[in-house]
Length: 220
Image (tube, rainbow, N blue to C red; front, side, top):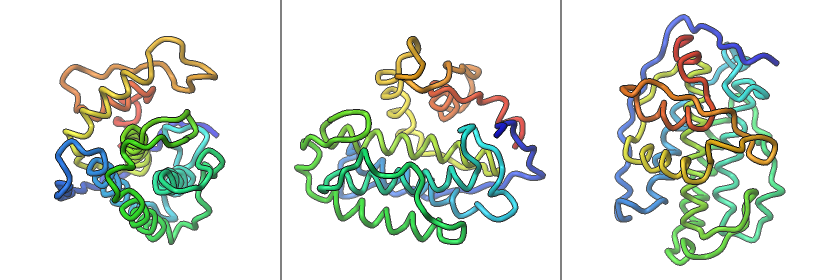
């Protein structure tokens, strides 16, 4: 499929009162994961029959398929501390259009339950990109959720306020973990796109991960 943006007739503005993560410490990645879930659910709730087939920055997926992938990311995050084989879990959740938010909420509840024990943050967890301490794993999943929530938002004409402090952390993690050079089959990200210096931080984050920000923003 082509991933040429569809110009949306109007952009829906959504504002979120993000959790502060209490009683977790401000820098606890589980708090960032909770806020990423809030952002993702706000966008998932806007996917409907009229926009489900829209192209997205993830060229292989429609808006509905990207929404199903977001649910799958949350499922993987929830499974991390368990004995499930996370790398073998599907890329797309088998969830129909009218149950996306229900499935995301159920995954969020499992994330909360499975990551409650502080010791999990130090425990090695096997994920599709290797084996890392739990704190790194939940931080990466939080960042992936935010980035894909942005992908879905621009695809369906949603303007969201993003958790800025978390986005700043995800941006630094992306620059450390996804080098600008050497992208290809083993590092499946498109070239870095650099928005203007005054662009919102979320644009710098998704641009580092290869999104052509200006092209998609222009279509909203």
